[in-house]
Image (cartoon, rainbow, N blue to C red; front, side, top):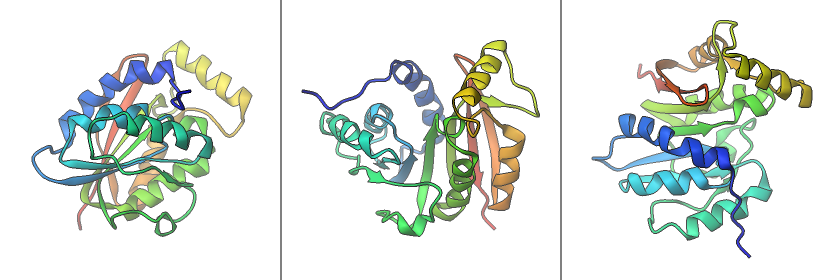
Length: 207
């Protein structure tokens, strides 16, 4: 029996996220990408073959998903995906047993709105530590912006999330900018994607 877990939404959004990655990942030189909250492994197994010069490091907090990630990796012809790590983003990155000290890229898909805010804080704090200068963090999901959630479907989605768990909900891009500024990260570009989602591209400022 296959250990793979399929999320239909992941299948729908992965080609759109790929286009953003193709705009920002440098395919002409070796690099390292850390994915925080890899979920089922559908994303990393789809993205990695498009960037053979980049080593992908998946990770997941939910240990029950690690088998699915491994199963997707095993069925991927490419050899540039490392075994997944079990990572709690609220802990310090020095405890994560990362394969390299600094990464060129950090990827985070559909995590911050379905986790406590301390996970969002941990994501930015650790991004400041693990990214190289001029390194990029790419985030995907639904967001509020300057106190506004739109359209109505996202308002309803946010309300539904908060009814499940008061610590969940759409995060405001302006609040994320505050977290980013504390660790020398700036918002570089915002992409509007289908289903009222966005990709946020952040850069670690070199001082």
